[in-house]
Length: 464
Image (cartoon, rainbow, N blue to C red):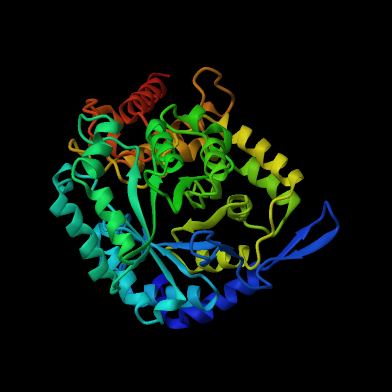
C-alpha cells in the first residue's frame, strides 16, 4: 500500500490523531523540564483593523496534493486530490485554523477552485479567505483583465467577498521593465488600485494589503503612501525566518533583511502575515551537524518547529503561512501553535548562532518554488540548485582546493548524483544567460550567475 492509499485507507482524521500523539512530547534537558506541544488550543492574534481573531497558523494552498501522490511539482499532469484536500481542510478547521491563503496562479491555476470546494462545505464565518490579484503578466495589466482576475477569484472561491486581498509579489519586475515601471503598469496606470479600494468600500474586500518581494524602493513607497493617508494597508505579507532576519541581503543583494521589513511594519502597527518560515523547506532540512546541536537541546522536537516558533513569536505577526501538502506536516504545525511556545531571548541567541552557521555554508538561496520554470532552453533550474545545496547541507561537498582522504569518493558521488538528478541536456552547462528566469524568482537570485558557478564547479571536478 503506497503513501496515498495508506492515508485514504486510514482516514485523514485518524492518521492526524496518531501523528499528533507522536509529536507532542518535547523534553528540554538543559532546563530539566518536560514541555508539551499540542496540548492546548490554537493561538490566535487579533487584527487591529477588524477585530478578526486569526489563527497563528495559516494554511497556504500553494502546493496541494495530487492523485498521483506528492504535489504538482513532482507530478504536474496529475489532478488535485480533492478528497484529501477536503480531509486536510476539515482537520485544520476542527483544530482551530481559520486563515486560508491561495492565489489565481497556484497549482496551475486550480488552487482557488479546490480551496473553494473544500471551504464551502463549512459555515462561511468559520474561516477567512486570502487571495491575490495575480496580474504579473503584462497581458493581464489592462483594467478589464485585472478586474476579471478578481471576479474570477470570487467565483472559484464560491464567495461574494474576500477577507484578505493582496497585491501579488509587489517589488518584482516583468520583462525588461524595472520594478517601479512594473508596479505602475500593474496597479496605477490602469487605475486598478483605486478600483480595489472601491471594492473594499463596497464590502467585497474586507482587508487590503500586499505581498512583498524584491525592490525595497517599492516597499518604502507603499508605506510612505500609508503614512500620508494616500492608501491604507490593512496588512502586509513578508518573508521572515531566523536566517532572513539578518542575512537576506547578504545572501542576495536583491533581497531585504526581515528585521527591516518587520520593524517598518511595527512602527505603523500594520499586521504582518509571514511567508517562507522554513525558507522553502531549507530550515527543515539542515545539515546533520546543525540538526545534532538542535536535538541536543530538545531531542524530540522536529527541526522545523524551531523555525515556526521563531516566525510566530514577534508581536504584530498576524499569521504564519505554511504550504502543508502532507497531513503529517499539518498535524505537526497545528501542534506547534496549540499553543505557541514563544522563543525566549536565550533561544533567540541560539537561533542567531544557527543562522550564522547556515549562512556560512554558502548554498544557493533557492526554495524550489519553480516560478523560474519552464526554462526556454530546457534547463531544470530547481533540480540543479537542489542537488548542489543538498551536497552542501549533507556535508558531502567535495572541495577541489583542499582534497582530503575522501575527496575522490565525494567527487564521484557528486558527479554521479548530478547526472541522476538532472539529465545532461538540462544541466547548468547549457545555460546561455538569457535572463528570462530572473524576473520570476521571488528570492531575486541571479540565476545565470549561479548557473555559471555550478557549471564551473562541475567542470573543475571533472578535471581533477
